[in-house]
Length: 331
Image (cartoon, rainbow, N blue to C red; front, side):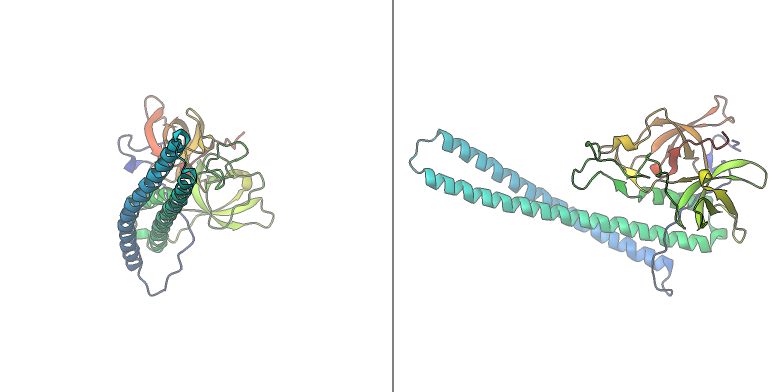
């Protein structure tokens, strides 16, 4: 692996990464800039509403807590009381329990409202990314390396997070197994990629070098054992297609694993992996130095790199979306 400048990853290998997603259905007369501006305004509005929702949620929580504490106190008083008005006290407790349940239901509804708005914000972010990506694909010759790297980083950020079963809320519970392509969980043996999927593909370049590159599935052969893939770093008008065997393809994660609820879906520290080298579109062999602590965190990866005296690069942050199990196809 060669690098032109160890101190500035801007001058690392010329391969540059982008991302692929289904295009957002928008009127043909609508400019990408207008769509992005409108979505950003909507996001700002939702975030302001969320601030108010969180205040109301806290008020609902306090009301629920106070109601249950009051009930507990009444129960204790009833046990120690010798008053003949036991029925009256029971009715009072029942009335307070009914009110407490209503408070809890209000609290739940507030949480649902807040979560719905958070989901809307994430969807708008994804739409911004898709519109930007489509615009960059059309105007690739005017796109900077930094612009593509930023887009890729944003796609990794908005990748949905797997928290666990909706019934248990925790995939560390017995019997609740994270799905394939969640974090470090590999694809199922019978997995078939779809057109448009982003993958790591092992290809031989025009110079004879073999690399794992970030690519997009362009076609799935009828026997489903071969794919036509498109190099996302191809120059405008000079698209580079490869026909490769399924065993030379590694599907990228479709979910980020939540470290708090699904720690088993993360690569452990010191695991050898293939990870996307920053500011490039090539996957290289590396070692996990530290793992994400919360859903938005990245792995810290040390890459094998002979251009450094130690033979290893400094630590680089790489999102979960671009860290996959190491695979030596030459064996």
